[in-house]
Image (cartoon, helix red, strand yellow):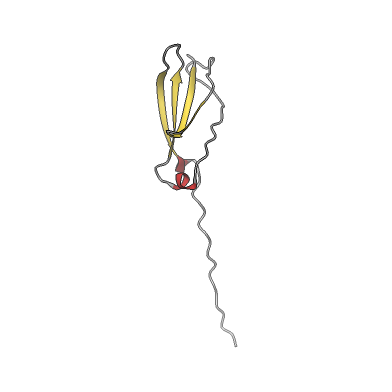
Length: 92
């Protein structure tokens, strides 16, 4: 089974891995997907990276699996600013 992964963050931003012709039922790609996204995408609660796995055929490829990963599960939440407490001491 010759498989490849297809990843996207929206309709206009999609990338494909190379075809793994040796992995059969346990494919390995070790490819990197690099997407340019804006801050709004990173902050939005429903932003996802969708990855589809296909079997490569001569005529038409076959979808065998899909996963949707919430971006919030990949990126730590922004740090909250620390506010210093002002302490007042009695004086003369």
